[in-house]
Image 1 (cartoon, rainbow, N blue to C red):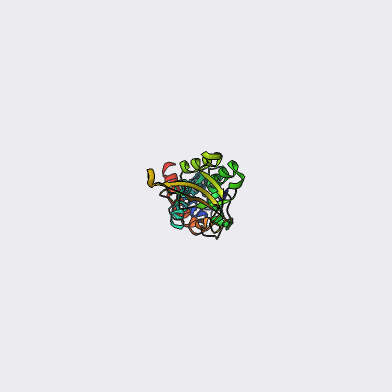
Image 2: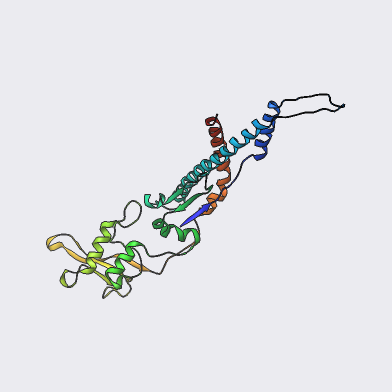
Length: 262
């Protein structure tokens, strides 16, 4: 998914025209001759026209540069907003944006969300129910009983970002495939525990030897499809900052373009 930030603008057209007129005045050749009590004044505007032509090209080039720089800065602001809105976001989510640069033929820069990260971010942008996470899809493909939405149980140790690790997911998925006396993971409500939640349970042994005690612990607990409120204003970041940033970047890009064109 991508949200185009179309920031087309020819900046300071009146100023450039005024500069061109001033250039023409400086280059003007006033030829005054007496002819039947009239005056004839001629002005050489060729330098002014050349200036306007050169300036127009630099305006377009500077606009493309400024748009691209603006988009990159908006991308950075989006990353910072993810860090502010979400609790311990992963690097994968925080770096989930991209920029498509503008050029002189297409004065349009795009800031978008990468496809994989969009599955995570979109529910927080537009609100509503989220899609199943990759690990939930994986579990559902291994066992029809494991279809649904899941949150970690007390038998899971989460990583620094508060998520399951890839190794844990692989281990649970493998456990779901084992049956009989080798089964150490099962799905459902444990027998003799009618108040326990529907979940993916694992067998756990505490202690060693004669003091060993076997039990079960919830690895994942099934929940209803989560719904999210809007809390990540992706488009608002652009509306709030795009014009200010573009003005700054155009001024800088135009000065650099004109300096290089001399």
